[in-house]
Image 1 (cartoon, helix red, strand yellow):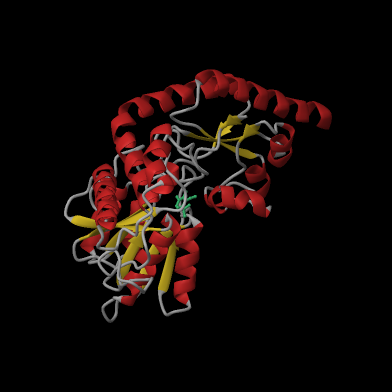
Image 2 (cartoon, helix red, strand yellow; image 1 turned 135 degrees about the vertical axis):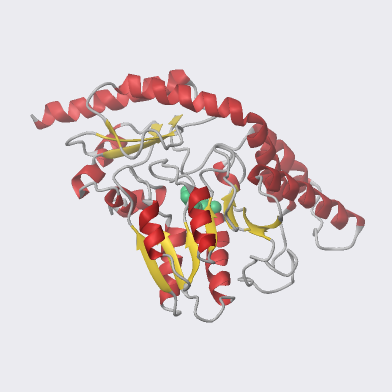
Length: 372
Ligand code: PLP
């Protein structure tokens, strides 16, 4: 199989699997128990916490592990609303956010929050003037992602945070697709991340919180994570996340160069007739979202079963609904259904990517011949 679905999830790094093994096979103690073994597990969790904090790279805050980035985003949004001062109940977000943000915000409107969803331009970027116009002293939180999971577009998070702070609001950044790939800019007060997008295990995410911006707890119970997120932590998952984070920091310059080279090779191998969806400059190059006039994307995916790629987001793919992100950048339903998302990274070889792109192009042209 040629794996080109790095935005859905990434292959687990061999070093990560190695780091997790002892905590699965032998060291089973509860990290919250006071025994020698429990303390050893707790120490491993603290090492991992430091590794994840370092790759996030923002000072003056703390990090709590969660079960996923979806949980971290739910916590950030719901817990911030819960602590809101009187009169501040507005949330501003963007039409191209992940469902973990959009659906949670929508749910919060039923709890009294006032929601504004800003549009994006054809290149997928938020117009800062639109945000400025919406900001007032009732805005509690501005939630904008760093790198888009469907089209790879990078939002100007630093300027967004500045504008939010100017209105006395907090800024939440979904940095799931940006972590370890592009630097996380200064400014956000809350940052959600996930291990499985950086060659770590599934089932663990984290919320980084600037001091003083901690949301109210979402999960109550045994008081783990300084009382902010109850539930026994998994030393194996934490150690895997920590190792993945430290590898991401170590490999970042090489990974960056590698995906830039892969991007150029993929575009050349596809040849003419393909259009890139979203900005080609403000973009993470491990994401190539493309469309072709008249293409039936779903059919192409079923024709090329040994290539793993996606129609839009992993979640949208199964539903048959065209992607809300592609619609938000102005594509028609038809254009959205003629789009493919290729995601590649550290373990993708140029050879396999070129082979896949040539076969994708040939399969697309074959559809045109049959249709003609
Ligand atoms: N945010 C973005 C941008 C994502 O791509 C994803 C995963 O697809 C998530 C949030 C949710 O992450 P998790 O799988 O850890 O819940």
